[in-house]
Length: 258
Image: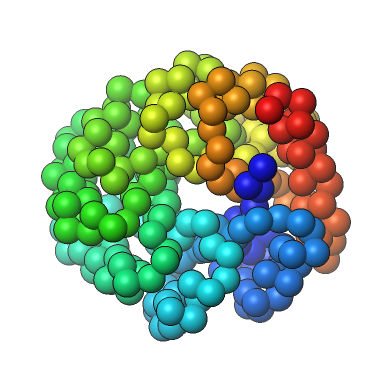
């Protein structure tokens, strides 16, 4: 099982944010090894963009076990505007295209949601240009969209994929097994989180996410890619203990269904 963690969850929250680039990012990789996890999904956020190590020294950062680079910086209602997308996404692509960091996660959530047909059409035109210009990069879209709407995006280029977030799909009301089967050839990353139907992220196995169904469905499509914990935070200062408990939950589920 290629089980990892979203960056920042092994550190105390920065500025009260649930998800933010950690102050001592190297320390998380030490904790990663001690927990027996395989990878970190790196974060680029609005607060960390200009001085993010991946922008300053990508060749150095690539030495660490990083599965994906998650561009939280794109969660913005300007994502379909050429100037915004060109500035933010192009700069990241140019930095990493000569490294082994070939997987990008693009969150189409909240401000960057693609539910609006006009906004989605504009985005499709822009993002296809990136897919064509950077064929060495895998663009993986994390979205709360109906299957057919997301397919409009990921079918544009061969290097477009799906980041399947278990919590988002739960609260969005989509059947997990149908979603997994529909995108079985496109899913290349799985975010593991438990949510209630009213979109509250909770401790694994306490919400409405049917993990038995999910793991069984992933096994049916022979999924062997990254699984990345993006679980609920607990007591500040006890991040390692929290993630260790969450890891045990998902390891047991994997052993049960795979």
